[in-house]
Amino acid sequence: MNIVVLDGFTLNPGDLNWDELKALGPCEIFDRTPPEQVESRAAGAGVILTNKTVLSRDGLARLPALKYVGVLATGTNVVDLVAARERGIPVTNIPTYGTRSVAQAAFALLLELTNHAGHHAQSVRVGRWTKSVDWCYWDFPLRELDGLTMGLAGFGRIGGAVAELAHAFGMKVIAYDPFLKNPPPFVRPAELEEIFRGSDVVSLHCPLTPQTNQLVNAKRLRLMKPTALLLNTSRGPLVDEVALAEALNTGVIAGAGLDVLSVEPPPATNPLLQARNCLITPHNAWGTQAARARLLRVAVANVRAFLAGQPVNVVN
Image (tube, rainbow, N blue to C red; front, top):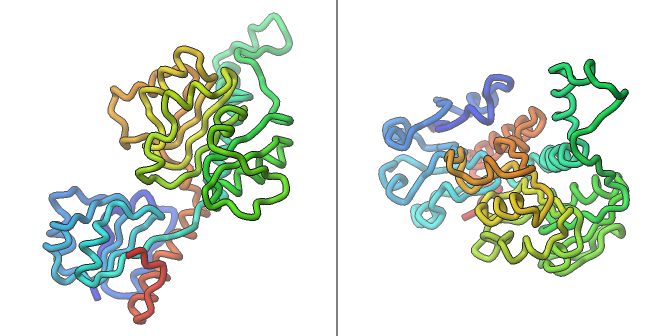
C-alpha cells in the first residue's frame, strides 16, 4: 500500500530517519505540501501521514484510494473526522510523546521571566559587564520561585509534569481540571477563579474546546495579581490575545511566556509580538529530538498496526 507523508519536515528536519516507515511499503515523503498540491501528491496513496496539512471533506473525497490517515501530532483538527468515518477511514493520532519536553519548555519560559538569564547573557556579550562600575547588575527584578503559587488550568499528562517541576522548585501547586481525581499530595484542587486570583504563575494545559476557547480573557486577567505571570504551552486560542496584550502593556499582570498563538505563523499585526514583557517562542516546545523520535516511532507503529488489521490510537 502506497504511503505518502505530506509535511514531514518539522518532525524530521534531517536528524532522524524514515527507514522504519519506508520498510512498510512504497513511501514518498514531502517536507511541505501546499493545499493545491495535496490531491496530486496523494492521489494513489492508501496511507497518508499529515501534521498540519488539512484534509477536508472535499479533499478526502478527491482521494478514492485512501484507506488510512495518521496525524503526526496529538490534535486532529486538521482532518475532517466525520467525513473520514463515513468513508470507513480510520484516523489515528499520537496521544503522548512530548510530555517532559513541553513541561521543560514551560519552565524555560518561566525561568527567563523570573531570572532573565538570556537577556543578561546578551548584555554581557555586548560588553556591558566589562564597563560596569559594579561587580554585578540586573535590569529586571530577579524573582525566586520557592514559596510562590503555581496555578494549573488543566491537569493532564503535561499539567502533571509541570506540577512535579513546580513542586521541586519549592512552589505551592493548585490545579483546576473538571476531571481531576486523586491528584498528588502536593497538588491542591481549586476552582478556576482561584487559579487566576490566587496564583503567582498561571500555566495553561487545556485542550481547545468551545468551552476553553479564550479561557483567558479580560475578565480573568483582571482577577490576577499585578505581579503574576501567564504561561501557555498548550493551544493559542485559549488566550484572548488582544486582552492579554492590553493587560501586559497596562501592568494588569507582570509578564507572559507563550509557545503558541492563535494563528501560526502569526501575522505581523498580532499585538502580542510587541507587548511588554511578553516572551514568545515559535511553537517548538514539543520539538526536542527525543520527543520527535518518540513521535516517529509511534506514528510508524500506528501504520504497522493498521496494516496488520488491528488499528490503534484511532480517534474517529
